[in-house]
Image (cartoon, rainbow, N blue to C red; front, side, top):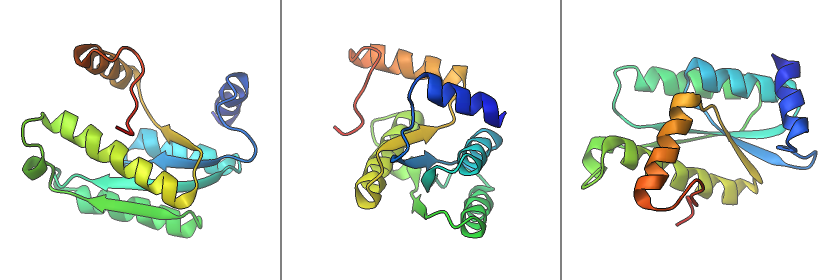
Length: 145
């Protein structure tokens, strides 16, 4: 898996030698695998975790990510929100996405990160394309707005 990830990174010039990568980590298997592989490849990393306050295990997931980062000397940043309370006029998914990318941008600036890595699967990508088309923003969207 590590070689496959490295080959993809190199093929598409995703991460340069001097980049610092902010990894968005939920605590689920996809994002933990991404974090682990990027760490094993020796990239300069920091981690951002959002506790949306929606799931029973939210604090346990937060602790799991925090412990992994502490054990591996990776800077860890967490934001806790009550997503249902702040959604106001948006779906939970829209509010979660906004909170997530606002926080990612904040941490990127604070830590001088140059790239963001998230573990998306094909369903996530389809959702992003649909959301952007609905907004009229096409395939790309800036989350700095």
